[in-house]
Length: 283
Image (cartoon, rainbow, N blue to C red):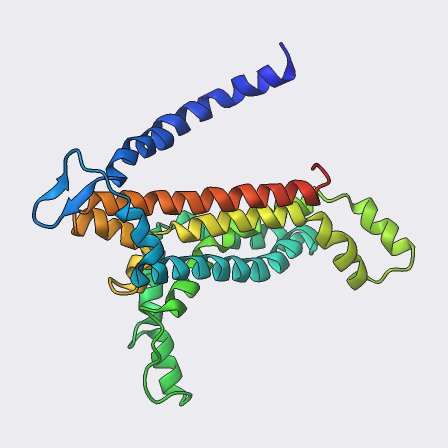
């Protein structure tokens, strides 16, 4: 049996699950996304229209939601990367006595339900929450800050929720980095700072890109936290899709938005994977 055939056999259970749970439902929604919806009547059988897709590109409200979702995804990814890299570096290269404690601190939030963590941020960020009350008590502000139902709340909540994923990806990348390469650079007279920027950081680029892809995709598809911290008025694509399906019963528009979100995600993953292969010298 050839190695390629063995690889396909090993991946076949996963491919079967993805096909049944992901691709088949998406394919079934394709005809719905081209149907016409009339308020009070529902989906018009046998109709065909491109308006559901055209609205995403022409309607100001839809464009605002799409842009907000992309900005949120990029911002959360950058925050997680800037906060996660030092933590991952400490776990791998820091004092071994602190390694277990830091790893547990990173993994522990994953043991809590997503709803519980989101409710925790509501307690902290609400107008009369712990953060605002503390700032008022010490005299830094006179009136509560608006930390919820806007981009600020979403950035804080989603960065906290997805930071462990970034850290774990970076830990794996740093653990696979050959230490003798850094030692060789140091023996040639390079400072620790120069070794980090010229050797360590470039060699962990595949892990950085992989972690960034994971966090970005999870962020733009998140539903529970944006609904709880953003409220019904501050929409992102996932919450808008939910409202189109469940509140307005406009399945054609919801299907078109779903395909737009999936298309953006697949395009970003494809471009990032190409960049990863190029940086890794595999292109």
